[in-house]
Length: 485
Image (tube, rainbow, N blue to C red):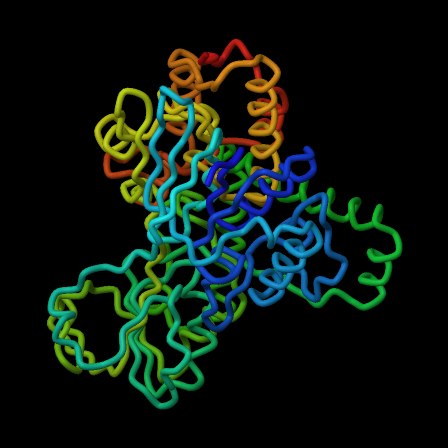
């Protein structure tokens, strides 16, 4: 099948790109989705307590605002409903091929087209390819010694087994990241015992969550400008947090005091406090929000283990201190493959260049996290170094889809076959961003996080204000690109 553009994925990124194409008057594109519905991570993650940690009115498209949010931090079902509603309102379903997993993409220089292959055996030939797969779609399941002998249930939070009844069971949770701190409070009251295996404690701030009153929903519905104003207020409040991550240690110290007080109010046991107190600077790892996590850990049926896992047996886990913990089920709250997610891509560019091999060997290099030298007409949304620790990634996605639309327009206006970033422009961007990242708390904060690749280089975070990213991508500079005939 020959099309103008192939978009991969139907999360915020893929749907946003599809909408941008529609608004530009294009109808000759296809969106390939491996699952049977839209939604990306908000379709897949259905664990108890799953919710956003960015305020709802900011975690949505500026051009498709939702006055119906019921809480300041939306639960997963509402976000998924929102994405499905956006899909319908913009008429995107007829462009989507569900159950179609992309297995690779190859650039054909002779015809200046991408050949995109799928697990179903279909091939799509396109002028442009836009990857909207994001970084939170491949669950990171650790290989625990002896796990093959475990006789109980074992599953990752992103693949929650809703058919397994946790009532009265002895449950082990491995990991204490963003997902775990949401589902642990939900399952703690129903399980017989809960053993939480913690490698590194997170910094946790109070979650200022509340119901959106009916009068506010009615106001936002009747006066869209009021919702835009509210959204703008949230944006600048969130944006101010970037100062702490970029060389304003006083702000981080203040936040750490708030987080420490938050812990002390919930936990009286000094030994448990010691286990839960991070030994690194706030912001080095992802800062989490929760009001019910610490109280859940004080329940008599909950214990926190800071020793590592030495062995899994048929009905137990043995920690590195030699203590055996009897368990019926293991739940992994261990996050996703992020910096190494690109090891799973199969993309061949000019002269047979292998993208995943290049990035493994030389490190991940892009221009603005969107384009890559040597791979014409290929675009990434929420690509390397465009994730955030302080604001909404949807803002970044909107900046990127506008930039991609400009790139497509430049190709078509110029009457050329394709474009790709100049190596010099890409190198300048990488040098600039890594210089800033090295100075930031992500590198200087004394921790090892999923922001870093195997070489300790931050390939995930955008180091600064999002309005700076918007400013830099607001207008594509043709001089930064090679136009390919």
